[in-house]
Image (cartoon, rainbow, N blue to C red; front, side, top):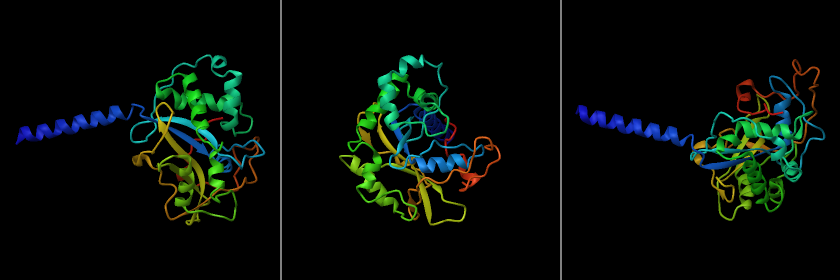
Length: 271
């Protein structure tokens, strides 16, 4: 009996080791797109508030980042290597292509700041080079035949409006028109306010690709976000008035308050 128990303990230990190793091996890429007006709401109401560049984009989803993930869909974490020579990475041709779909949204941020942050926080974990990472982002974006994901939503009647809301299924179905076959995607939402239980704002849409970024795949179910509950209606807000000023950023209170318990989910640290 003792030998049997020992055997099962060893099996469990081996499984845990395998899962731990697999969790640090990149298996896919997450192409994480954000709705700029929602990002700005999050930024305005952060613990240390900031402002978005104006006019705030409201006809495009912009890229937040390309995140290497394990086979379950969870983002890989790692220690970033030393910075490369950024002037060699960001040639004029690469910069022009990145700016078309991956612009910095935060006021006073330089165009390279966001890209550098995303490489250090995520791209380096894919065990590739900065050149390959950014060229892969361009390659994935070029697979959107209508130019921007918002165009797929718009052709299905899903538009930015402060008085319209949509079922999660309808948004997902519109996004699936990107693909040749039915694939799963991730939606991330934020609360409109602390009291509204029936509606949420769309924050991010994540498309998954193979590790080379050459074809779309289903995003694994294990890492599916829960912030867009199936029962809540989803809204794409128009830009809101930014009440935060840079001088008063430390003490300002935004018009729309994101509950503090949810703030840690949103990566607004990039500049």
